[in-house]
Length: 191
Image (cartoon, rainbow, N blue to C red):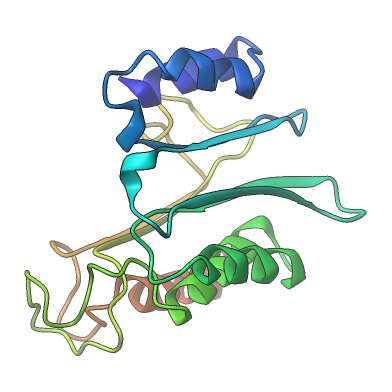
């Protein structure tokens, strides 16, 4: 419901801070986290008090690039997870997807979600190197892509997801490492 509200309001041109105000009507707002950036570079975020000690959002931009972004996380190993991801996003060259991938790897290297380990359920058949999440995905939408009803059900230029259910034995039980493998294969194939 919240995702659809955000999607609908962004399409209507509603400023992100006003969208956050709308989201505050959610009875579970204190346990929610949002980072919203629109195409005009306006940003807003919310990290609810119920998300644990290491829960934050950072909105920033890449100097002289016209790129605005938001990175957020909760139940993290430390605040450094987000701060390191921000630094990686800003310093990485290449495409927007390259920047996102670098930020995800930086967050992974800092410990990511403190609940996720190689020993936490479900334990997969694949090798496991420092598991810091259960899911990782990257989605890139170009202006001519076919939209769906929400942010993630259209026909997009790039959508790679890694979950406990789709990791193969030859991949890695750490979703971020497997995402890197799949992303590199996609790029090598002309993506």
